[in-house]
Length: 265
Image (cartoon, rainbow, N blue to C red; front, side, top):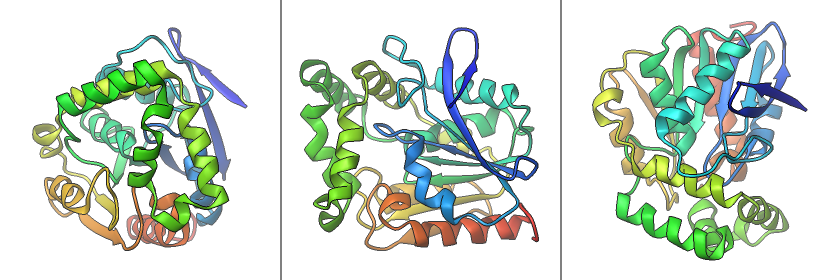
């Protein structure tokens, strides 16, 4: 169990794979933690240093009082990568993690050589929508939104499985401060103008049944970056790394190979 003391915040992180390998960094979604990537990490090729962390307010990281600003979430990852002396990483972010990735790539191209923007957008939802969700969570906890969230996350067969129950448990145990804080960060974020300035290799991944960030939203975002790629995982929801890890890992590995990022490529 590794904790990075960043002064005003401690972040939980984990390193797998080759300690001397090419760095790949994963950023989790709202209501999950670094276990989001367990199945994908197990399928990654050799020669990679795989770094995962729990975003503030999630998992074993600190949960400061809400609200959070997106700039703070970007700064958290920036400071973690500086703490670990990481440069030239491929950054994989899902949902809010993808927004953090967009923000960090604009800020620190020395840290990031390529982006994988999964199930995310340059802007997600409206401020009014997020304020409504924040009010519900303050009144009822994350439990008050859980069923609706899981419908957006997973197709019915997975949602109703015993594993689906475990993901529900992870979601509802997210601290109120963490869920509402990150919701406020999403509500205040619009990356259309800044993401359009990016000039680095980028891949977007979408799930055909994603009820949170539909494929058209993901495609609209990635088309802001010249030369980028788009992959659609059919039959998958908002977390394709969970319900279709083999397909997800294949798309990710193909992108890493095209970059020459890792051993034997």
